[in-house]
Length: 128
Ligand code: THU
Image 1 (cartoon, rainbow, N blue to C red):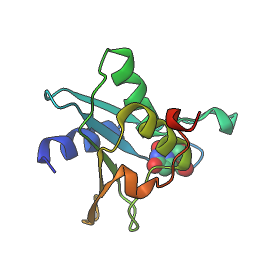
Image 2 (image 1 turned 120 degrees about the horizontal axis):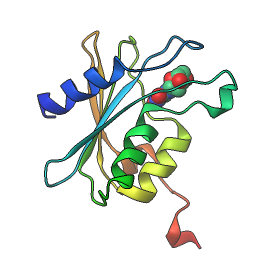
Image 3 (image 1 turned 180 degrees about the vertical axis):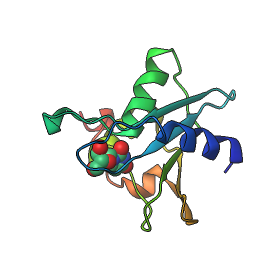
C-alpha cells in the first residue's frame, strides 16, 4: 500500500471527534486516477447518529463526483487491527465494489484484504 495513503489516513484520524468511545479512526480512499478522499469518525451524544471514518470518506468522495475506487486505508492505534463495521462493508460494496482494504495500526501491524473476502455473499443490486 502506498505510504501516502497511509499517511493521509493517519492525518485524518487526528480530526476524529470521539469523546464517547475514545476510539479514533482515520480512513483514506484512493481512486484509480490518483485522487484521495479522507475521513475520521464523528460521534454524537445521541450515539446512534455517530458515523464511522470509512463512511465519512466515502460520502465525501461520492459527493465530489468520484465513482471509481481502488483502495481504502483504515488507521487506528489499537493493538488489534480495525476492520470496517458491517454497515460500512455494505456501503463500500455498493459504491466501490471489490476494492483493497488495507488495515494499519500505529502500533505497527498491517494487513490487506479484498472487500469481497470481508463481505462474502452480499445483498446488493444483483439480489433484487
Ligand atoms: N469506528 C470507525 O470509525 N470505523 C470502524 O471501522 C470501526 C468503528 C468508530 C465508530 C465509533 O465512533 C468508534 O469507532 C467506536 O466504535
